[in-house]
Length: 308
Length: 214
Image 1 (cartoon, rainbow over the protein chains, first blue to last red):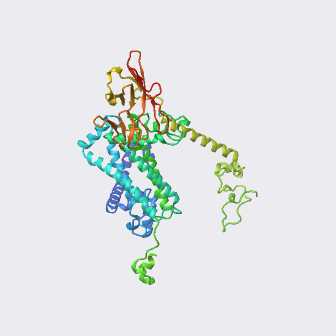
Image 2: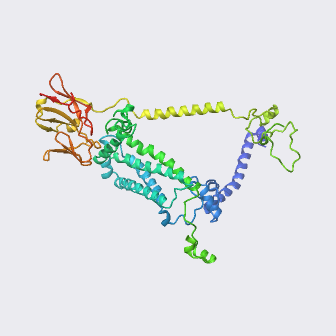
Image 3: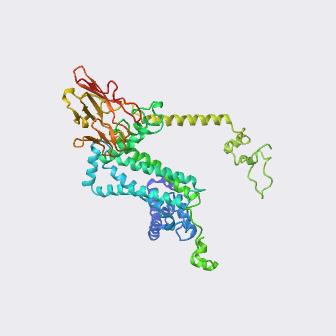
């Protein structure tokens, strides 16, 4: 059509095409507007929504399971949990609280990094600056400090609970070992963070801590077999940790990098494995199934008998 | 047919006998690597050919594993070597502290901040104590009123010659190498330390551990 018109008279063809377009728009625009309004009325029907959330949100067992399974973060988590296993009197909630504290520490830690220079003299000045002048600096620093203390306590209590409930036993032995590694990395995060204010407390604490590394077997110059292997204060494990023979600028920088980048990455990977293994090893370990009152009535068994 | 079971087409119960005789069967290698399964390959007569050798080449596999292991081991070693710097930007361990006549009898703490040493004069000797607690490496404080060194970290105590007598310290504090420079000043080297480990002979009387007659 358009080609024929163009062959005779270009202008006529153009007018025709514009008319056609306008006609099409008269149909299209109301249709699109209607679609937009429908979308505003019920956003769950829009293509954008359905492309993000790939299942319905009705409160059915299937959809609730899909909500966990089809989410990249939640899928590490079991879709269903035994009701006995989530009693706070049983789990103490310590694993979850520890992870929550880790998230707080990551958040406050990243913000603190914006005002902190890991270099001698400047580091301590930045801490004073954060404490006294940076907006919300004091509460961020204190949140970071208290969350760090609480995380260490949380890890211990979590491991204590796991030990008391025998949850380290088969088939969860592997996950217990991952947990032990996570304990080590939690303590290392605390230790490396200790030096960062570059104050007297941190400096001497790290002096003491790294002096223990002198006595490392084989790898420390004062440890068993260390001198036989040619270890000196200038090539042993302490030297590698400090980046020198004394606690100085290199040690501060190394502490900072391990604290902010190295250890958090490794710990995060181990946490992912840890949570995933909880699901794969059969969910949170639980006591023998407890019956609800009405179920107990049905089977004419007392709650005490059911608890055994 | 000498093909393995998995190489046959998926059986279809409703269809007639699978076209084992059909030369143009392009899906002959369903379930095998995608070799010779495309239309182009079929038209070129390649559908009849597949991976000819289905056995695992153990020698090649071993070679690959050796290469991967060697590569990762080399990087692993390099990773650790990386943390041991060749050049240090630390205070020099060899320095002059002035003339012996500047130091009176007893403990002199004026170089504690600068060099981490104390100069100690007894009636017959001058020697230099390296100011590092032998427990875990803190710097003890000189307490003139009590005539002793006291470590603030864990409470080790040393007498005025650096000999431990209380607290967790396992041995006396180390002494640094001393010698006289041609100009008569004392040269101290804190990288050469004389120790008196517990239960072992003292090195405090070795030449270089003290100056005498100065």
